[in-house]
Image 1: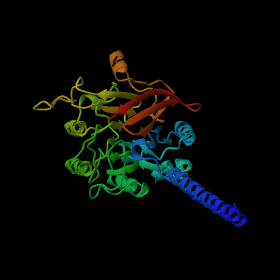
Image 2: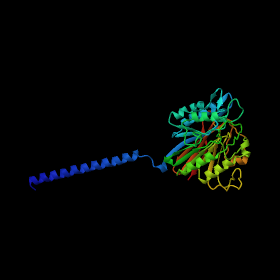
Image 3: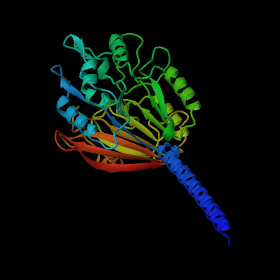
Image 4: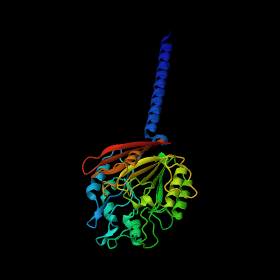
Length: 364
């Protein structure tokens, strides 16, 4: 081969090598770009994990003790240590002994206790209880001004409820986990009243609104938060023997629409059970309500301060409803949503360590 041919061959090989290197660099860059894009993409909706906390009943037991901070503050500190951090906390009512006492409304004091959480971006949602409507100068009775002060103080609650019910009855969603959440008010008043229906009542305005909200969602998971239980488990409530038929209508609706959990308080204890066709409606209606078709869990987590110990619980009921009402013991529940499964871990304790004592799951 002549000298010129050798030089030409070397030049050609050099060009091919450079071209190959350039192509390799482009391929590496493209792969790196794909990997980077993949790492920056959000998790797909079916595997997203989402956490919230439910608790209720932190009221004190006298005019000198509006909120049981001795019990509630350690719970708030424990919630603050949860990993991963919850997105929100739902409080199920009876936050204070009286909504008005000591010449002031007590709602802002309660709200301030959660500043440790809300300052970190954890939203506080509140459901109203019967004690929020009481006045210190009346033994009982629901006062309209208390209701209005509640609405004004808890301005972060959504205002998408029926007219007049803003921030008392409301709903919100989480698209990433396909979840729908609704809060109802069983004590709504148009004026001061001494008629005490402590077992609650769901008026037609709220039921119509709830049906509209549910009709507009395709969410897989659905949760209802309300102060009152539908099923009572202890003998400490006269409401247990005089249930309101509107709550039967409400349960019938959430059963038909496959809600995951009915979360409540009012009774000062912890109890949970999956309500299926083995459990009769309470009360039986005329004509009789058909047997429940689906499995909705009633999660009663009714003491993070108020009257720990609860009333007498029949041993059979205690077992069937997984009842816990130890003295000087308070409870809160942590709910995780991941794909088709909802997992609830409930904690108990007092002023020291809080530990998980009950775990259950709902899978759709």
